[in-house]
Image (cartoon, rainbow, N blue to C red; front, side, top):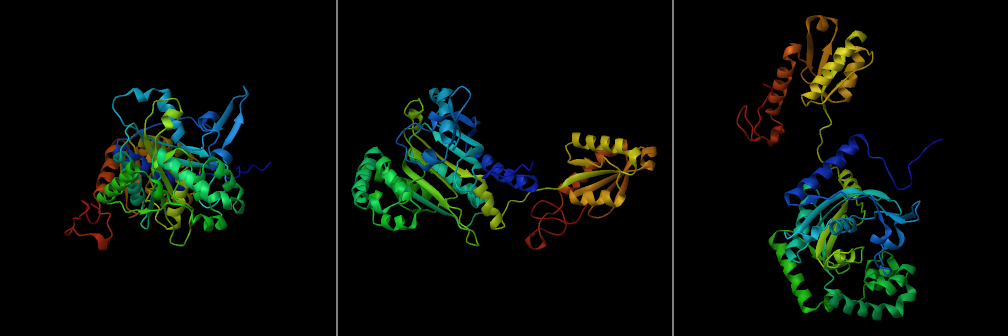
Length: 452
């Protein structure tokens, strides 16, 4: 039987996996710099966690969740997003009882949504996000925006567009919803079935419709800004002022409502189109929420967060040829010349690994030429050759794969010798010639011209 991938899933292997890890490591490192702590929540949750409101109008809840009954007839769902799980974890672990607010969490893991696969979009994908919970402040809101913006810039996204909107407080949203219902009711029969359903559940979601004909009708709809009360207007103005002060450019887009119903006040998305014109939709985004912690059984605490799909990030970095630099080289390839030397090569490779070096050994009989091809394929910096003479003399031959120089080293001196090799390598100049501004034999990067 020919086993294939489930539609909407994909393997992440070899060098691609290294790129994913590099992207994830940057997000994690920056989140920790900002004081966020890691949360690891289960992939499986009780369905009620995501179906908290029978009137939830989001596509994710209504159409995209993988929900099933287990053998005890309990309804379970593969998590479609990370925020609700973090909120549930905070409540279950009574973290809200802490006096030191805010609770700052980051998460990374697979989420599942039944949607049509396209460029950078899968039914199982990796999501990274942060949540800042406990303090209702524009400073918490702006912090998540700054963190997400800095992360994307550090990954290399230049022509990045941050779009923000204000959904206001409950009073403002209720007034706006009434205005939208009044506007859309006479024309709703001309709109798609989803919009007809959204009018009943949450007319704000109509603004996010992607049907071209509906988008034309939406252009004339009332604007949220006309229905913000004084306090919501002041909060939004102060948020925009703070964003300008920290140097984060943005534009206001009143069509931004986000895909979930629990948002209030500021919401935001990142738009990016590749150099070739590829547009995978929103690169990521987030927003403020007031009632989520209370909805999952905790006290009334405000929160704010964002999330990115790693697959979308990767696809655009690859499209624009700006993937992060990764080191896919090996330090050593240990080569036995003859079957009787395989055991010794295996032991030497293991010894080098214990010293912290990336080492591999040939564990089958191969020709000299084939072993060097293997070393080149693994981007090995050095080859270690062990033949009959080396076994007899308790030594190895170390060959620099770049300079082709080789040296006989006694087994007892091997650890010190390879340590010195890499100490010298760390002090080499890694700049391109046109970038280097140092004096002769010294470089602005702290390294040296030429190998010692």
